[in-house]
Amino acid sequence: MARRSVLLLVAILIALAGTAMIVLYVQGIEARATKEQELVEVLVAAETIDTGESVTDAQEAGKIEKAEVRRADLVDGSLSSTSSISDLVAVGTIYPGEQLIARKFGSLGDTESLVIPDGKMAVSVELTDFERVAGFVNPGNEVAIFATPQDLTAILPDDKEQKLGDYTRIVLTRVPVLGVGTTSVTSRTTKTEDGGQVAEEVARTILTLAVTQDEAEQLIQADRNSDVTFALLTDESKISDSPGVRPADLYPELFTGGTRS
Image (cartoon, rainbow, N blue to C red):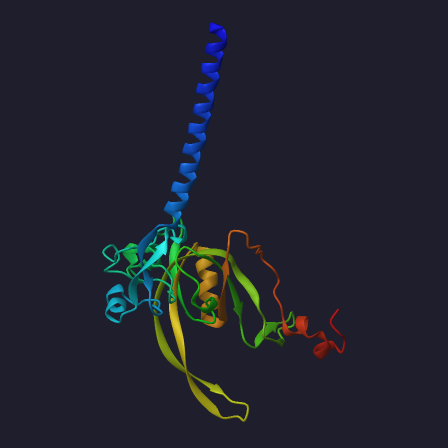
């Protein structure tokens, strides 16, 4: 009888312990769910903050405001105050509603702020928004660089020249971006279909890359004598050196009378 009472007491204690554990587990889930739904204050862009625009100027223009978001929607590194970035500028375009994060701001044009990898050097090129992936290239990104020289001429073995026309090929397969400078607007003149000329304003930005000496020579040569285009890469992007493409490769029927296969 005493043994039965002891077993019954043990069973009751086990049941109570199990119930307590279930209650604690459920309370933990509810607490975590409640925490995820908790509202926290962050800074967001009320209007577009342009590359190179200072935090001070953006604040004075009313482009930065406070907002409440669920903790579950909080972006890693988001800011609730501008105190840590008050002397910095945007290193990339920040769009309305976007949470402000520290890595989106930096000291542009200050070479002492550049962290250049060992064995490499910093080289800058100036590109339009079109050539730099519509402004999505930011410090820390990696890019592939393509060059398109216009009216390329080949020297044949008998020293005769042969016009090859436009030609596009990859110059550098993967290089890191160290900095993105301020954007300036320049004017350029283009021809219309009727032979007239029209002036248009083009946004241009200086981008600084980390390259080896050989890469720097290729980049500078391409920048001086070709139209340069950046391609934004991810870790999974597949990129390799290739012989490039000529107009005849795209439109063989115009050059040989044949058709593309």
